[in-house]
Image (cartoon, rainbow, N blue to C red):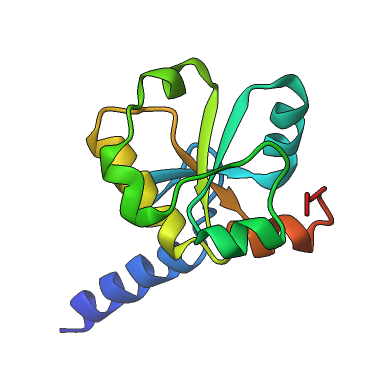
Length: 132
């Protein structure tokens, strides 16, 4: 009994100390640091997909982001997205961004990542540029 308890404690502690950047995954979706994605934006290597509703998108967004609400993602053609180093779906906190990432992956897109820190809130937290 004690041996099993010790194994569970060790397993739990390694999960708590896990780092969730770049090569690591959150439920099967890679994450990349906002600073790296900001640099990729300057080089034209990233496609940001704003998955929020059009009204939210019009208020403010990441520069060059395209607005594709979550409900419309299933019908988009992903072929043009393959040319980017990163395809980054996002919403405010990345709930819709995560769902979009999973849909894009299920369509065969392999360059999909989420932001770290998560979502548009994470982008703004680090004082990255926005459009209005």
